[in-house]
Image (cartoon, rainbow, N blue to C red):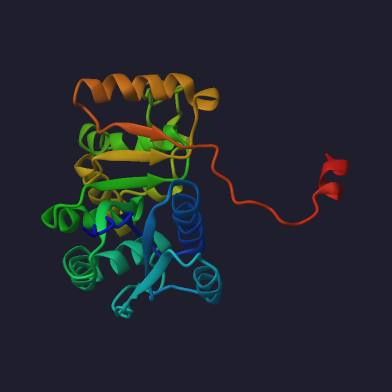
Length: 261
């Protein structure tokens, strides 16, 4: 009696515009495929893309496919709109097309879609994945301290009225060193800028994730990881999965750099 081999687990990754987001997600998809036996689809945005994105996506292994969401109009944004405003607007306006692609991957392609892995700027897409029965995760290829700040932003927004640079006391995040308000992200230092409200709204979606995949490790952020695990056990936050250190491989000869160092 013949048996049908089950398809390998498939993950869908959503990258927001920008080389600093597309390239790490492409590398992450490649590692999931080559090191762990997944197949993958990485979805990008045509708006705000560059030729660099195309060359990277063309070099993906055969088991990693790429799909691009159509460009969306941005001509209604002010000329001086921050890049975060542009990126979040692109993501929001691309949600209807994303829904169609996700539905096709889940229902029509025969994939065993086990996870939806989204860049932090794409957290608005989590309800789409959840509606299709696919657990959503945030891929945060930065450190855990910054993720902690992002998770606390809605609370910080509601508890303060001044600009963060003017906070009288450093911000104390669980498991992190005290952080002076003046050292917080430049994007959130001006409450009157439209980017600020968009960032706060974006971070409200973070708790909808089933977990956080973070570019960190115990040797670098032991106390922060421990604090996150304790909060997760209490149901405050989704669990965190440290996968670092995560860096792109360098094929160039580093002898000269080593000598300089």
